[in-house]
Picture 1 (cartoon, rainbow, N blue to C red):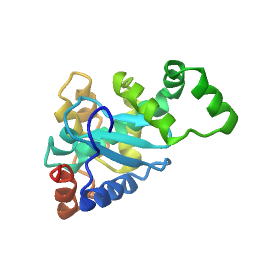
Picture 2: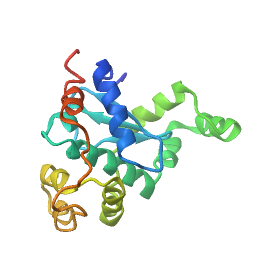
Picture 3: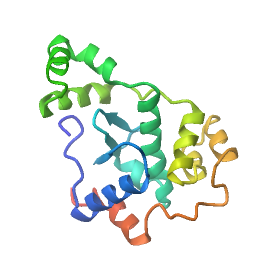
Length: 185
């Protein structure tokens, strides 16, 4: 938030963001934060904090696209834990603090977030991402169409729910609330 501005914080949007995180049925507790502005990739921090950007929520009328960004961040995190790279850049004091206490302060997490914002997300293997779409019961096609790259084609052809999932990602009302999360800024 210090680098990109304050997090979006409409009460309805915050509640819906948590509904979405819970809906994805991951084995990790997720906490979604949304920043105004546009980026191509989400950021994930230790402790399950996923930072999305406004364009990742408003780019489509399909909540499966936003779910796809969250699953992309989670798959990347599971493939290559960015904590080691963050700690290398943050310096020895934060590393020693983590080893000594097995926890990071909010100030240290904020420093790691600044480093994460400056580094691109390492793309996960497609199989790992597809596995998360399957586990979460979310179609990968809508997300792939927004990404529209050659690699995204595999997310369409191997979509675990090509005809659409029978489990809605969010209700229409909740989805509209999430899309308006940054409108109060």
